[in-house]
Image 1: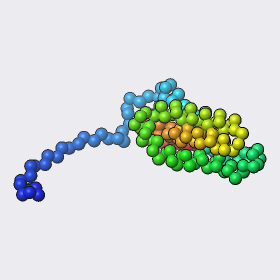
Image 2: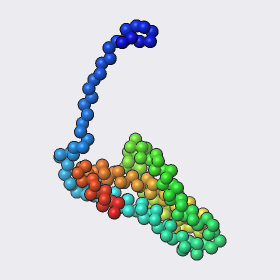
Image 3: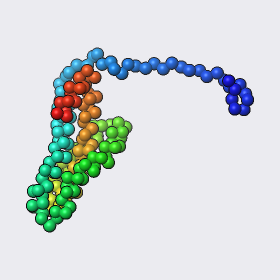
Image 4: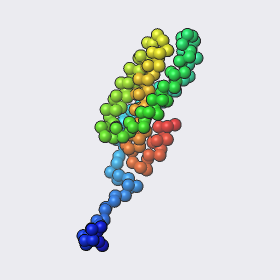
Length: 167
């Protein structure tokens, strides 16, 4: 084989890569108390995130009745959650892989609590929307629990464990 300048190109050496079979389970896995406690904590986190996204939309009638002069912006109470989820979920998984998921889940929990406190003490719909924005950052990150749950258990148990999560 010759190169572009007409000289003889050196031979190309191709190495064979060793690929591990990713479909095999870890044979030494055992269901311990730590596994069950971690699954329980992640199940509660996922449930809290779903709850935090679903409840504000069903409370719009109460919010509009409590703040009749601000009914024009009250739909944002429910919409801001989906908007934040769409934006944040596009990059948060890769960031959590890089920096560690534990700290992202701690951050999500803090955002959820702070956002709920802000929304619960609101004196206007704008404050509720602001609190929901903070809460939405929390539950957007909290939805990382689904892949975390899949990574805790062996492949043979993932379908069952994920189906319990999203039930």
